[in-house]
Image (cartoon, rainbow, N blue to C red; front, side, top):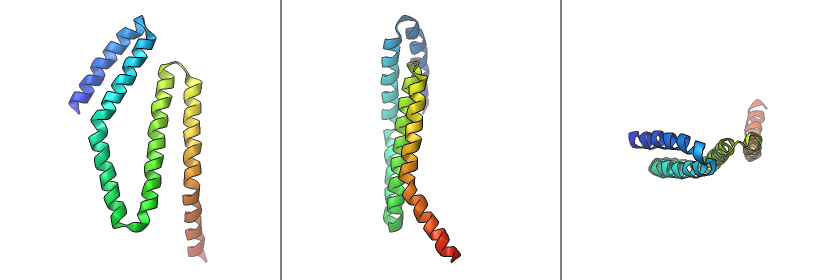
Length: 126
């Protein structure tokens, strides 16, 4: 954890200095640091996926819900990454559209879950 934070702080200082010289090079360094930090987190992410896989195996009915959860998490992370890159490049409108699209995509993905939940509630009320 401390190693990653050190890399980020040193990179941030370098990026701030580079932005004065070349914004394009600073953006490339930013993307490289993001990839590096993400590679450090892969062990933790794989542990989370393994734990969720074990839960899905223990409870058969939970598999589809956990798959949906993982898809939503993936969309959220990808959209946040993309929106942050857009903002770093000065494209706020594009960042906002990216975030809005991801929210709509998540809403569309969760509609069947909402429908199932409504069927359960109305079945209990009858």
